[in-house]
Amino acid sequence: MDPNRDNPILRFTTFWWGIGSFLIFAVVLAVILLLNRKAPQTLEDAAAKPRYEIKARVDAAQAANLPKEAIETAIPDVAAKLAASKPTAVEKPEQVVPGSPTAEKLASAPPVDTAAIDAAPATDEPPDPAVMAIGKVQFMVCAACHGQNGEGGPAAPPLAGSEWVNGPVSNLIRIQLRGLQGPIKVKGTEYNFPGGMAPMAYQTDEQIAAVLTYVRNNFGNKASAVKPEQVAALRSEVGKPQVTAAELTQP
Ligand code: HEC
Image (cartoon, rainbow, N blue to C red; front, side, top):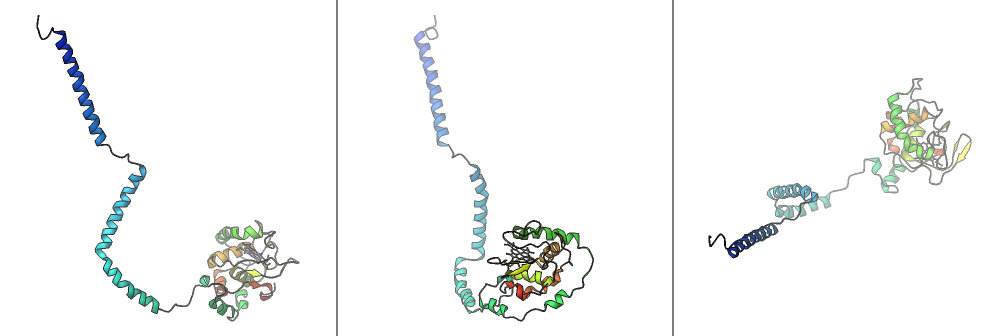
């Protein structure tokens, strides 16, 4: 009989040593994992990382090019130049503030020669389909008030069969560039909408020419196409108060 191998107490102790060392190993492993735990990386963190990197690079580049002191010394110089500069006249008509001195000056400007614009030779050519396509898109704004088929409604008089629409081109351009207010007779009915129609001068000459060509050749209307040059010739009208029917060429 082997006193070591066959001693049950000794064999039992070895078993507990085994369990014990296994447990110690498990605890050490748990501690290591616990200490090395990182915060879970979210998608936002991952996305933000390159942004922080770029910001750091931009900051570094700016610091290298323009030191803070250089900017601070330049500021009084720039401010002095700004204070001494005179504002230049507003040349873009769409920037004229209603009721401002510029707007008043524009209002007292001599009237444009609309006769020359309306004297454009009338042609029987059908309107350019490409122009009509642009006009159709632009007309969606008009349709909000004048109706999908220019039939008129609670917000605006009809465009279909209107003697104004089929009449002199300059009237339509001026209505669009300046808006319209006051009583206006369309197809025998007198309309006078409170507030009238607002100017829509933000569109380009091409777009205005196209939308007017579109309304002049749709909903049963038949009239000459409107050319962008005719619109351009009346751009000086922009900024003047809403036109009245009395100021327009009677159709
Ligand atoms: C916000 C509503 C509104 C929009 C948008 C609008 N209009 Fe008008 N329009 C009016 C009103 C209101 C009148 C009548 C003004 C008055 O009572 O003096 C009018 C009158 C007219 C007239 C003269 C009267 C007639 O029926 O023939 C024409 C032409 C005209 N608009 C064309 C246009 C065109 C072209 C567009 C789009 C580029 C347009 N309007 C967009 C409200 C609008």
